Length: 105
Image 1 (tube, rainbow, N blue to C red):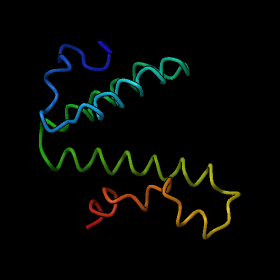
Image 2 (image 1 turned 180 degrees about the horizontal axis):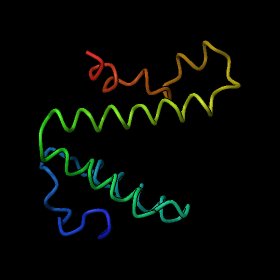
Image 3 (image 1 turned 180 degrees about the vertical axis):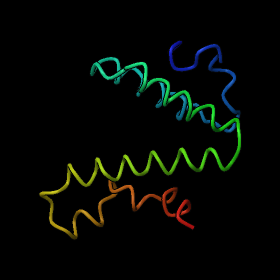
C-alpha cells in the first residue's frame, strides 16, 4: 500500500470516496501482489489515477478513458468465444457501465 500512495495517507483520499471503494482499491492492490503483478509501473499508474482525482476533471477523465480502454480490450479478449448478443448485453462489458456511457458524452 505504501508503494501505491507514496506519502499520501489513505485518509487523504477525497471524502467522496466511499469506504467500499477504498476497500476495493486495497483488495486490488493485494490481488496485484498475489498475482505477481504489483510492479513499480502498475503501482505508479494506480497512484496517478488516485492523484488525478485531486487534480483536475480533465486529467481524471483522461485516466478514466485509459482505464476503460484497457477494460474493454481485456473484456473483448476474454469473451471472444461468447455469443455476440451475450457479449454485448453482459453486465461485465465495460461498454454497458453507466460511468463509461457518461464519459462518452
